[in-house]
Image (tube, rainbow, N blue to C red):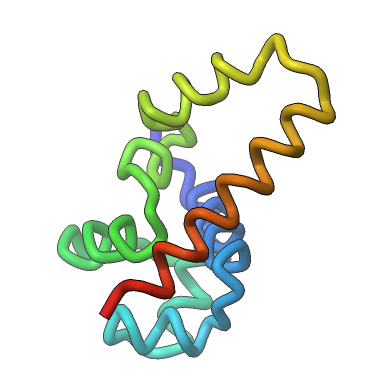
Length: 108
């Protein structure tokens, strides 16, 4: 069963990780700020087209947004890091963040 409240929390967390405001996400999705706020609070759902666009913008799988299940890639990465010490995990996280930031800067 779809839990809109938790779906909204996952969307909000992903938006915040990108350091986007609700206004910025609303503009990218061509929605009102109130529509994004209602979505994040679990008070409303969204059209399939908007969900697809949302997933692409936030870099999330639809499975994760809808049901909280990480993508196979995310599971594989988590598995690779599971037996590493905390210092190594933080080092990998910092490296990946830097790489993603660099990639974002090169996008048109």
